[in-house]
Image (cartoon, rainbow, N blue to C red; front, side, top):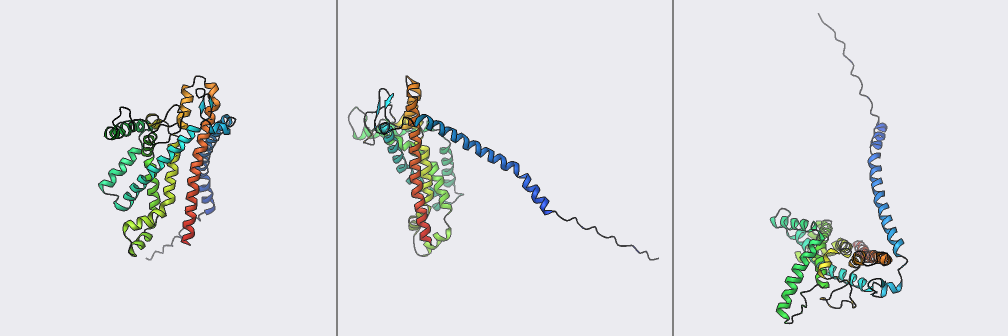
Length: 324
């Protein structure tokens, strides 16, 4: 007997409501978006409060005499010109010292080594450890290595007088200590810039007969120069506000003269703020000078950064026009 089985009809799959899925996905991302926006607004508000407090407390004392005169009456009057001059000189010496070493190190890691080699791993580990060392440790290192060892060694070899010439706190030792402090920033920024250079450009240079050194000098370094300047900008922002390293290596409480030699001591805005905030006999009387000094330090740092940013922008525009 033949049994006829009626075929069952397969139920149609439900239609996917893409509009509902899109709406659910949009709603699920609203809370994280709001939280991140709220956190960003908190950071912006805190920055505005800090800057507003500094401007409110310091704008009244800013004048031409305040910027061009030295301190008077035990830091309770006068101006801050020696501190401004010392800060600018310190930052310039620091940049001159840190940028070449940082660029050479980044080029070596990027162009001459492999990521898996032992030397590369050791150097990168040293850079990471150097970035995590507290700034006060750099100050103690600068006092022991640069002043006592190098400076004292120079005095023992070339100077017979009992007075120290190079084996004393000086602006050169403070600049080298800050250069060591900001070295990881320059290396990392330069490496990131080197990674963005297409390998085809370097291969084309090598194919045309240029050596590796010529390719680095004429192709790689010019192409990475905006990134190198970014590292210099970050180094300026970090070094200009450091106080702990220069306390041991060159900064002075008060000097009646400007530093004219590399082995002279100097005044610095950050250290000047620290001294007035902690050692002034009348805090309320020196508070306007304190706020004014902080305001000048911020403006000077912004000016140095703006100068570097302007140079970087012009180099980028020149490179873009040359590529066209």
